[in-house]
Image 1: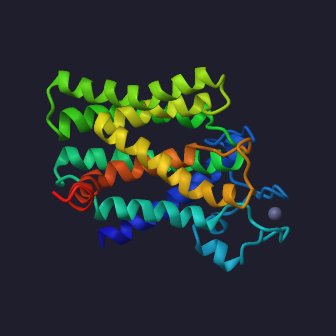
Image 2: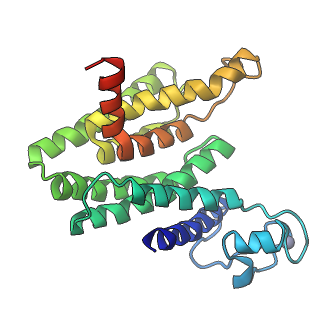
Image 3: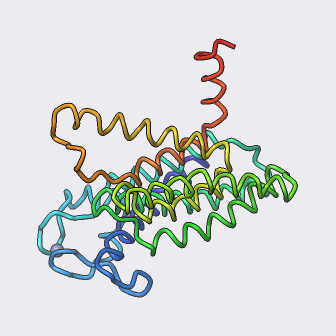
Length: 264
Ligand SMILES: [Zn+2]
């Protein structure tokens, strides 16, 4: 029952991600304006906006001009999937404060998905998404380190400062060294959220995972010469996937590593 409710919530937020990305790209007000078709600008009715259902009924085409709907049902399913796996594999006991953390985490997933989609399409992590995420990271840090993990203030600060240093610090170094060609400033800002949320151990894991995933994705393109060292590859999505994996699965991954690779 809970899983179905969380899945439906995820579909609705996925639909919101589609709208958010489009409205930020086109500099539209995403609070007051009604949703409209991106081609004919016909204002859409509520029955045109049901996640998945409307898309299927309309066979992916606008009811009014019959051009392809730009909003992707894939994003809706993706967010629903992220919500559901977060619920099933939540790494904490379900106490009151852990449920608050879960709520904050779901909001982060919405913003992280929007960021990944935006970066993959337009090679930029927009401030309108990154800064709210950093603010959210501050709330997550307080809830996680003090509320859920019961750390003392100095240990909590060590996690946060360590995490930020590992991701943002490293990227800032690379940014300065490469004069902004290897990493963008957006990645440094995203690193603030990741450091706050993950702490230093999981940030290290996320950094490793991001590079590993990036390599797996980029390598076939490099080998087939579709990508050259000068090709633009957005790093944000790799970092975002790595952050989600590190937050939810650091313990099983580290246990697996110690058992399988170190044979302990
Ligand atoms: Zn239309």
